Image (cartoon, rainbow, N blue to C red; front, side, top):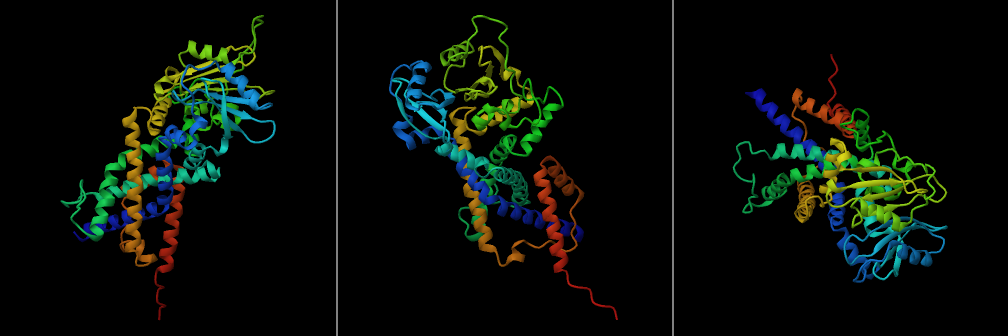
Length: 454
């Protein structure tokens, strides 16, 4: 009986201590991710409010892209057109990403009904681009990406230990509904733990669906594509293809589907001696997009750099992952060199793409977006309450870490789970080893010296 009591108390304190470690490390990053992610769910609405007439368009049918191109080239002489994005919905301008001969990339906005250029902004300082860079850690790349990934992995530890601490164990109140009539620490505990448990599945989903895009773990997942056709993201898949090696992936950032981001660059095609072969214009590309059913909102046209080998890419990323399509064409002839969609995706790629679009609140319509927003809001509130509880109870640095029960050793099951998580998420595993080593050193330093023998 005494041994059982010791084990229960020791395990509870261990879980509490690791929950605290995870919380203190993850808290600021999680709040940042939740705030930026929640805002990004409403990307188009926020940009319409923020930029106003710059991104707006007049009522009426859209002019051909060739007419809009003429206006862009007249407004920005010498600038190279690298990307064209169709309006995300009626009432919005088309977007033209330009590379001036001197200077940084610009995004120009064109009223498709009139062909007038509304104006331009620096691409890298566009509001939602900055939010996306903060969310993914790209704002301080490459270190930021590793920090976000490590925090995401520790969020899983936070969830697991938090559920263990919440588990009723015979308790009747504060399980599924907070005890609002209580006061002090008990009320704070219920307001922190109960909503966090309800939100646990959403947070876990957000973490797991975001990890394929992470700096380290995402590449390891992509490496599974070398094992079989079940795990290869798409045809022509090639491991360790860095986005920087593909001009389109570099330009599009996270706008290109994960499955295409980790595919080898499409072949450039051949003329085959056709006398009628000629470089396709934007109207030709729209005709090809129309023939494939993707000449609508969600279509982006990526053009290769002048004087460099590459392909034209039509990237269609609508709300539903099942409708995605990527078409590569030879820029000299317009020949299609690759045409990849949902039917060509592997089972792994389908899971990742479906998860990505749900993560962004788009896959299942407005209820999906509201659910993700609710998850972000609850996450901010519960994390903030957790930090508040720690701040109020901290009597000192040593006591706040809740010292381990003397004589208690972790069971094999807990160790096996920790090892499995460390192997599955290597950055988490490395940090676990570091913290265990630091704890061991601190425990050795704090241990009273043995008395000298007479």
